[in-house]
Image (cartoon, rainbow, N blue to C red; front, side, top):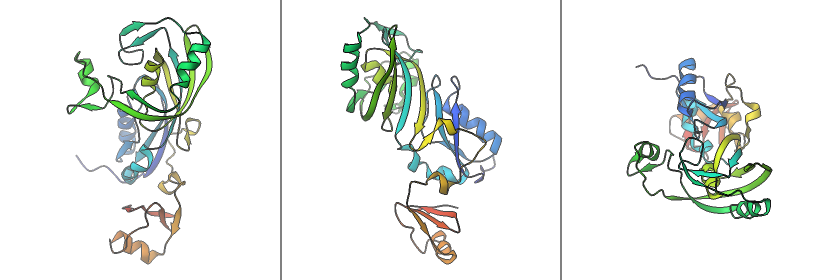
Length: 258
């Protein structure tokens, strides 16, 4: 198989529908562009919303995107807990619906720094194997805890045992784990923001150039000779910056662009 292309290079904002996996979306875009393609954080198949897709040479910039904070809208069904924290898992416990006051106490306990079990149907490796594969085989390993930061967890609406929440969380936070801790499971889940990027701006036909996609990093403009020296390894690029030459991205931190 010939190597994947380095162009088009940049960031694509995709509004993923419910059903396909994040890898299905990546494969579809890769077939269309012929370029290397990767993501900066998956979404579960049942979830919708913003998926950051890196194309071409920009795939090497993934570390600057995967750690960005996230924002979600989710409908949590508080009548039952499921094995997976969503609608795809079997019901493991039916619950009495809390009143508004009790719900607020539960929500308040999940704001700030929290430590919650990773859902069984996740991509985390347990003993070298993906947890979701173990779950599908009927195995039930003890899932590790993950520390996360919940900056906001706001009740948007509540009725008939379903609460709609607006959550701003640190990277790596499982909304399904929050739903389970509330005593329910995710009925719907939509990612609306990743860092400075919004699902409202999603357009997978538009490739955002790497220099613009990393616009929150300080910019350093260098000469043509300096750019050549950096690409040849004779001069290190500055840490924590975007290094540009004539508007073209030369390096991000110490990562040199081809």
